[in-house]
Image (cartoon, rainbow, N blue to C red; front, side, top):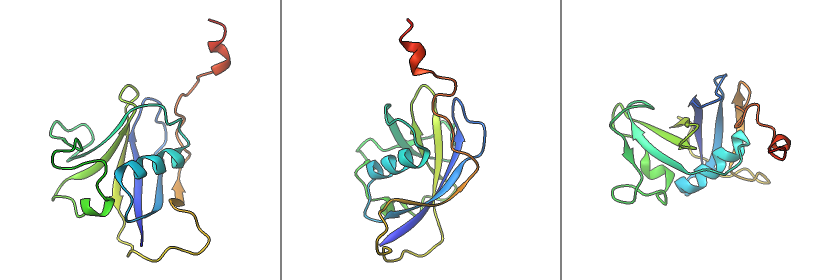
Length: 144
């Protein structure tokens, strides 16, 4: 079955616009799979560490991390929902530039995969995708 997730950028070193998307993904997907799907959706270089956590807000001090004790990155996405009351799921990429995205399960009902469509699949986007390294010129690196 396919579920729809809402992915919303909430912060990041070079975040300028409120980018977000609706992402269709197989309900059997793990958080590792969701990481890869978000990376593809924003077109970032998948070159940094990442984490998922549950908290009331993105910079909250009470964070439940997926470290294998209570939850694991291998957990099935649908096993996380519904989240505890007042809590949200966040994806944190690149611990230096602090790209943080909120992940929410859509109210759309799970459905059968659409024939010929490869999943995960972005069905809608708002605003422009963020630039991972705004102003970075890989050619200038050769001048050092």
